[in-house]
Image 1 (cartoon, helix red, strand yellow):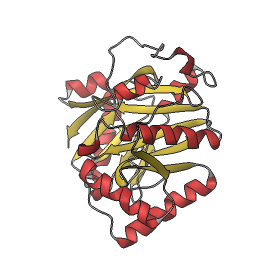
Image 2: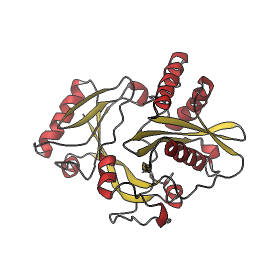
Image 3: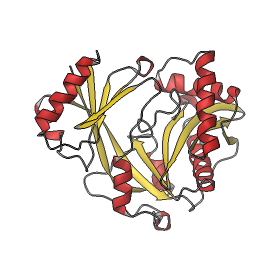
Length: 288
């Protein structure tokens, strides 16, 4: 998928609700029916992002070396190994060093085997983030969008430039140059033409203020990359981006929306939109 704007998996991180899973939501009729709980959790576990110009390896666990424009470092997830947790972490740290990186970040998941969380804590890893896994049926209920907010699917170079104008201040990343913008447009267009994904841009009184992406995999619409300029928050821009992604992904055959939501940002909106909580994932960071 797209690189600068996508932030697939690393975005939309809403408020966790504690250890007990709450699968009722605020709109029971929006709970997923096309996929089982097991399928939803498996789809969440399989979700990883490979930015353009990244490197990756999958031995014991999935490792991705992020390019410098996203801060570098190595992200780990999806543990599937017969080795013990100490051996798996040693391997990840050795690979991080071999790549010339100094920071290793690991995202937990209920399906990890072995589980690395206790060993990471023992080694003094910092718990830096938590995401909640949410899902809902795409086709109901409708999401209300206030007046003055519009949302559009990104198809042009100027729209890609507008998306970048939102992502740069929100994510603290470098702006794309002309070549980067053209490359981004080519990737967005290819995903859109193939029915595999899309990027949405929202405007407030005609000005770009919010964006978010969607990748369609096995009937799931993975929602990622939501970013809203600070002055426009609380005015319905995120809801507009969410509603358009659900509408467009339904047209492309998706039946269940899946999102890993960020603490204190999109969680209240997601709950009001009928998303149901299926568990949490936590991020730990180690200096190498």
